[in-house]
View 1 (cartoon, helix red, strand yellow):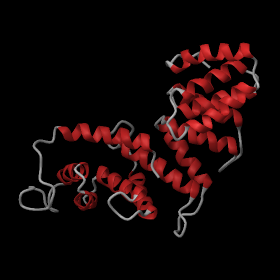
View 2 (cartoon, rainbow, N blue to C red; view 1 turned 30 degrees about the vertical axis):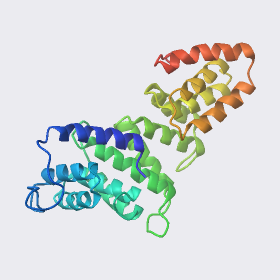
View 3 (cartoon, rainbow, N blue to C red; view 1 turned 90 degrees about the horizontal axis):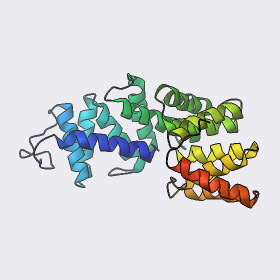
View 4 (tube, helix red, strand yellow; view 1 turned 45 degrees about the vertical axis):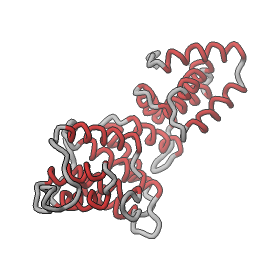
Length: 267
C-alpha cells in the first residue's frame, strides 16, 4: 500500500489547492452541483475531493473515475488509494496496482505539479513488487522493487525510498548485499529526519564500535518515531544500552538531544 506520510503530504497540497476553488458545491451529480460527467477533469477532481471530505465516497469515486478517464493524474492517484485501502470501494490491490502503473508509466519532470502523485505511485508499486499480490499476475520481484526504490531515492531524494532501499541492500534483496552502500542511503535519509533510518544507521555505527554516536542516533529516533514503528526502534536501543557502560549511556543521551533537534555532526 502507499505510504501514509507521503499520502498525507499530497493530500495537504491538494487541499490547499482546492481551498481556492470557490463556493461549496452540492455533492451529487445533479443539476444543483454544476458538475456532470462531461465537465472538465479538474472540476471533476475538485468535486470528488470535496465529496470525499464530506463522507460521500460513492460520489467521489464516480467523479474520480470520470476525471481519470480524461487523463487527470491526481484523480487516478486518489482512486488508486481508495482501492488500495478499501476506502469507499471494495478493497482491490490489483486494481490499485494497475492505476499506479498508469501514473508511473506517464513519467514526470522533477518539480512539476504531478511529482507527488508520481513518487507515491513509485513507492506503492515498489511495495507491491516486494510482497506480491496473491491471486493476481503480480508476483514478488525484488529486483524491480529495488529499482523503483532507487529511482525515488536518487532522482527525487525521498527519505522513505532511501530507507527502504537501504534495507533491501542490507538484506541482499534484489541484488547483492552491501552494508556500506546501505549505510550511505541510511545516512541521507536520517539527515532528512527519517526516524527509521536514524535508528538503523545508529545501530550500524554501534556495531562498528562507535558506541556513543550509535546510541545517540537510536535514542534520537525514539523522539520522532510513529507509534507503529516505535516498538522495534525501542528494542534496538534497549539492546544497545544493555551492552554499554553507564558513562557511554549518559554521553549518548546528551548527544541525542542535539540529533533530535536536527543537529548534524556531518557523519
